[in-house]
Length: 169
Image (cartoon, rainbow, N blue to C red; front, side, top):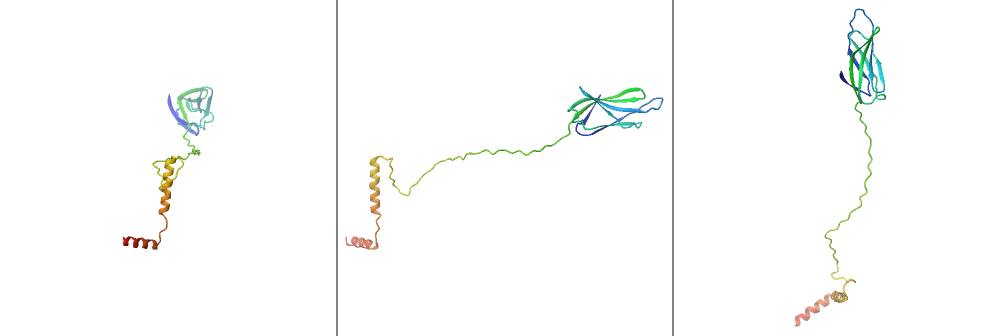
């Protein structure tokens, strides 16, 4: 028995070399029998031309599953039946390509905030805070008051009077 690879979803043409010898010329009828566990399929051949015989198997994807099946070439001459060839047909699906779009849901990422080495500067050098002890708050108030007093506006006349006062000393 020999193995032969066939496609389930395409037409397969099998050609066999066949020689019938006898004393009288007779017409031969040839067929290919494919057997599975639960059924047998018979495919008649084209007309025998004296040298070879061809059998066309239609697409069988709707009838058979992928796998191996026993196949026999049967020849009937007049009233005699012959089985000159036994094969194992390995039926497979031909290559098929399927492309589909895939929609992925975007994960909602929550923003992450990270702080490191944060320093806050105030334009005022001294701030009054309610969380400081009363003594420290009082000291800060006194400093604030003194700074306000120093920041009064000095005119040109005031500067000249200071210069005259310093010379006279």
